[in-house]
Amino acid sequence: MSLEHTRKTYEKLGREDPFYAVLTAECFRNNRWDVEEFFATGETEVADVFGYLSRTAPVFNRDSALDFGCGVGRLTQALATRFDNVIGVDIAESMVEKARELNRHGPRVEYFANTVDHLRFLGDQSFDFVYSSITLQHVPPPANLRYLEEFLRVLRPGGVAVFQVPNGREFREGSLWQTLYKLRRQYLRRAWKIIRGKPAYEMHYIPRAIVEKTVGERGARLVAATSFGGGKPDANFRYCVVKTP
Image 1 (cartoon, rainbow, N blue to C red):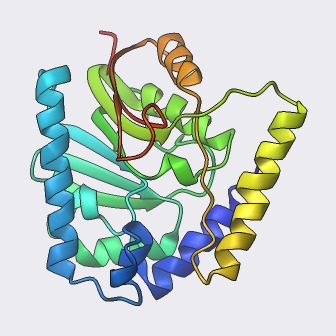
Image 2: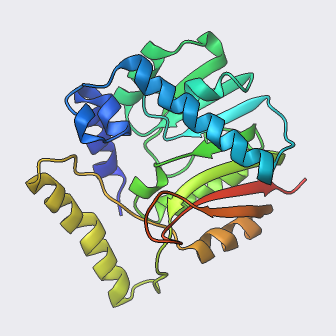
């Protein structure tokens, strides 16, 4: 699956309704988010994440952090109160431009647009913390798994990655089930969204078994996998991973 549709979708949303594109509550559609209220949700989420980390991976350096899928910087700005330097990465240049405009932490925060399925512009072992929330679920496979591999590449030994991604059934490559998955999640979902007048973003997952296998193969250790959101148990996980020193 190509990233081009994902890029075009969020490029358009970034120009027309960027805050709603990040937090899609209908009551805030058509640019009805208050800026201060919007960024306060990022502070709340990051505080929750660090409460979670106090129970799962309490000791790691606080030099640099990566916010993957940063949008307009809702979480990047909150992370900047806890790290010396933070980089936010997003697929849409329009989002990145808005994030730069709203940056309150000067050169300690940088934003970059990245439209390919890797993060090679970021060096190996360059971050103490990697965070990604409500982002990988909108990235089609196999790019979503490649990004996960990149999280582990850029993480320093002893560093921590926290990322959220839905769970689901594992399919054999080239099987009928995989074809049906692509049809439903890529094309039918887009069409249904368009018919309903909603942003035509996709929804994908990475099977938990694949997450665990990838983490182990990339020299890291899974320390927690916690059900995320209020849906069906084991349908969506927040993972906490520590890079092996």
